[in-house]
Length: 491
Image (cartoon, rainbow, N blue to C red):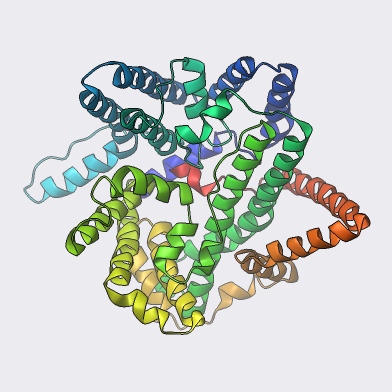
């Protein structure tokens, strides 16, 4: 359903993003300055709450009303669950209210479109409604609110009676739009005690700039090639070009989303917060199970703690475990977007997780590590096709093109236009960056730094030079208008 994607893209471009001039040179410096002026944590929380609402309001006042409604619902629901006897009833009511917001703004159009498809079989007149524009980040802050309410119900946390503190937890701008998904108990103490100092600021700045570099230097450059290939008719794309496109997309979405997570974690650190990690080299996994332990870790943890385990987890019969996995990954796909292609993407991963539990894992464990990696990458890449292409027939055509079943007799002309030296270097760097290669080099430099202080000074100088270069690239891209919004802003 292409209209959904187009409308979402329009919203994203109207939203303040971390790689924009207004954020880097106006919003962020003002927030950091105000936080630095007030040592009192309560004042800092108020500043961050107001700043987060303003950050979200940049995309439109309507967005602010939605997230404010979510905060109010969760604030009073948490108090009611913690105070009154009928805790389960209050929890159910709160969950329904949260899901009503999410379903209406994210899935209403999807539900109407599918209703019209079904009723057209019986020649019933279609329902016509105005298209509802998807509010950015609603999936993320809804899940954070739900986890807080469930934890209050389970008595693992106390209900937060300070509205500003809870509002800061839900709306905190570094991770508001695209995660990581933070559980309340991970940040509860930090809302009362945290350190805003030079050490945290410097560590956060390095992490932020690292993420920014991943986004603007790698993800954005590869995106140009990926968008060009996927804009063409899959029936006319040669196999090698198709593989180049999907591998490029796998790299693009990783560096785009992991880059955002790095920036969110870095911004949090600059402000004195410690956020959970969200990625751990997912493409080096030797199974789909390992992939999900490394990809979007906070989302996987959320579904495990708040859906999979309550459904029975691994404690049930094998058939029930398999059903639980299918339910989780059906909803994981649907969480990512109101499209059946996202559901298919989720069910592909769910199916291979089931197959691994049936016996595929044992079979793979007897093979070479290379075979295990290859299996994982092929499954992940095949699934990414359905994630990237929203129309099911087009996605199927692209799968056929990967295996040489397209009708074209053309050569791989699309690839050659991108094989410049700078693009090849970026592509190689991107592939190496999906492994611990650069991390190992950094560890060796750190070991040498303990012996030779000059190396440590040189490292800091290079980091500062890197920060300046990344900022220069961003400014240049903004001037020529060639940067892309974050992919996960759509969700």
